[in-house]
Length: 266
Image (cartoon, rainbow, N blue to C red; front, side, top):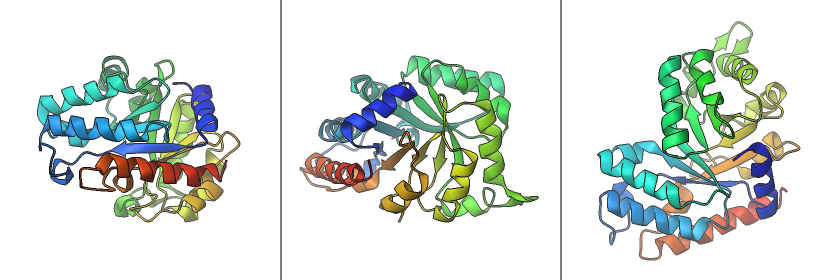
């Protein structure tokens, strides 16, 4: 999915919701099997109830990889049923020397048919560039995350700037707003103005609204641009809205609630 199509989808649905699929087998409703098939049924039912409210799905690969080859097989099967109208994000946080990154890019973009992949920029521009050479695909680079450990490196000063600022500047010179997004945590409100000064036009993937304490209003007021420019991810708040037989119905209700709130900002 290219940038123009993503913007069109957001405006048509009046929603910039990304549903995060983090299927922990220990948290699945009791009537589902605690294995790859249980994860598959769980995700497919969540998707069926949320697809009209969101424009994107983000798969946290750890929950699938932890189930071995069966988990990865189920991941590919689930991806195959999501229509092209939705941006499919593999949250795998890859990033290695050039030839290895290129193989990661081929795996997720060509073999697994994902539209976007989260990327760690720690090894520098040559580890990020291979993800930018695939038409209508996205590298979503870790920028300023919402976890407690962000202060260990991302918010450390290098001379007069924070490390996250250096990451945003360097990576944005590698990839344009047509092929690169950045992960910005919803809880990092003091830095929103500076972030948009550095990367005014890039789309941002924003976790941390809801369960992690981030405010949708703060995110929209601080990070939205003329092309909307944000995808707000919600995972636990949606997919674990209920642990009962109606888990998918409750997930759909929560997704619609969030989408309705988002429409007020568009």
